[in-house]
Length: 397
Image (cartoon, rainbow, N blue to C red; front, side, top):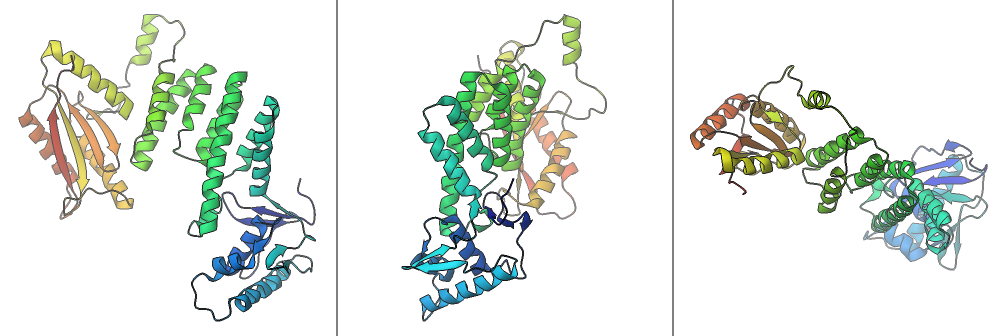
């Protein structure tokens, strides 16, 4: 419950000021200097902000004849805006010995300060249950990047890095205690929350660990595949080595309950409805198939080729980002799918790149596959085209 006549300031995830349950709004609340002034005062409500620091932050390198006077003008206008926004009439901003303070007559509760309090108390506590509670409170107080719309502001950017680092410390130490307690429910909650707040930072491994410990095997399998595909499709990169190692170790722990062979085989059988073209799979599955084919080649004498398809522009430079790349990648994926056989394997390696395993084929057949893909992919006079690289798969044993 929020206290009456108290300002609540949100810095994490979004910047917002609430008073008596309602957001404070004003005609020109988005004014850069006003916003910057209030953010600094609210964030340093206990110690204030030195006049020189405010001048540097709000005036920058502007050619201002009297910087003190210019800052006084900004403060004067800010006081008028605050009154128009609905705050009780006070001398909101006070100057004492060269330091500007927010008035003590209107208390301020800032989420970043609350986070700092939880974090510091957790670090000092010697009682494990209390440490866990405080670390978790800190984690759930952190609802996103510190002032995410102000990353170009030096002080805000520095604070954002500090809070992100402290959030990671809180999550890791809370997870360690939850493992000791075998509290897999709260570990799953923490993992899902951390993955949403700080995406693509390996937190999915906490969720998967908890799912496996709770026996929710199919959910763990799906999370494994979705996570790897998400890293590749959304970021165009692999998960970190730490993440891949963790997923591999956890994946090896997956065990099914006792079943008869018929039921197992039924679960393994692929749904044949509407299956066209090659077999599309995630990168971990693709790796496993590649390894298996490498082993089988010793006895079968098969000829297998690995093809890399890369989208390039008119100057043969790989396309790396943008909406056009995403749309063209979808089209290329469809063209590849329809140009290879049922027994060939395809994986979207990243934005604008696809891997294909062509099984029981020849170098000449690879050229035919290239032509098929181009025929289905190229449209009119488009300048974007596909660059191909082909290697022979060598027996691994």
